[in-house]
Image (cartoon, rainbow, N blue to C red; front, side, top):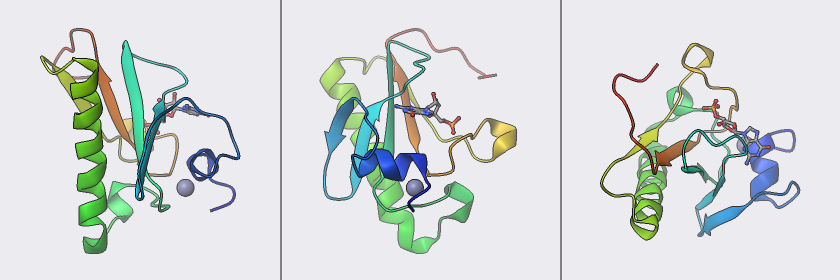
Amino acid sequence: MTNCLFCRIVAGELPSKKVHEDEQTFAFEDIRPQAPTHVLVVPKKHLRGLKEAGPEDVELIGRCHLVAAQIARQRGIENGYRTVLNVGPGAGQSVFHLHVHLLGGRRLDWPPG
Ligand code: 5GP
Ligand code: ZN
């Protein structure tokens, strides 16, 4: 999608601090980090969000989470990190290209706000 912010980041049309890339996923530093580690993992395929995903996206969504786990391992934050998918404006979704937040490197309270 040409007018999608994260599609443009994946395509290299907009700059980002890349953390990981493979055939199906792309990960980069969040521009407004909420924790010492705040990485966004996105599928290269444009998917609007979790509620728009279908059975054909099962593997892709799983992959995004496994990439987050791999980054957490590499960064030594496995004592406690969080993967978050905000779904819909009421939960704070502001970019409508599915993304998994990886947050860690500090204490994470529960429940989240
Ligand atoms: P959401 O609120 O949709 O769950 O998460 C969107 C995230 O994207 C936010 O944490 C926001 O800081 C981040 N973000 C928005 N625009 C940009 C951008 O241009 N570059 C990067 N790296 N992150 C962005
Ligand atoms: Zn997109």
